[in-house]
Length: 153
Ligand code: DQA
Image (tube, rainbow, N blue to C red; front, side):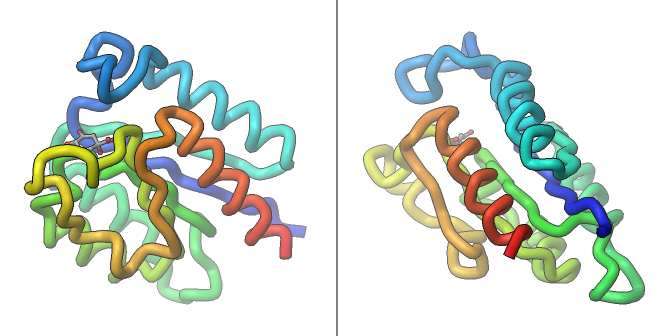
């Protein structure tokens, strides 16, 4: 049996978690979040890579690198992405994720709908399997739990 694989993509400024606006984003660091996801993945017998970048072009390149000539042979089976500020701005990351045609869940630590109106629009939500917003770091674990469930079906 081929081991299933999940990629977690963290967008700009999420490297500052733990010290960044804790009222919105909580006290967990990015390493805390990633370590929790890695432990959950290990327990489920899947591989997980966590990737963070502050640069739009780097995130596009990372997602493009998942493209396989055969769509039945994806290098990654599921993506969990918090595009952070790029949620509200990036057609190019949206297009990259559409191009590789890998199912994904959009995660936000904060409830973006309870915040400024410019955060209410996402370039990702309409093409996502689902969206989790406002559950803090637990949102990532919930997304991974769903992904594991789907990948085991
Ligand atoms: C965020 C919400 C975005 O509006 C913001 O730009 C972020 C983080 C969240 O996780 O709540 O950087 O995606």
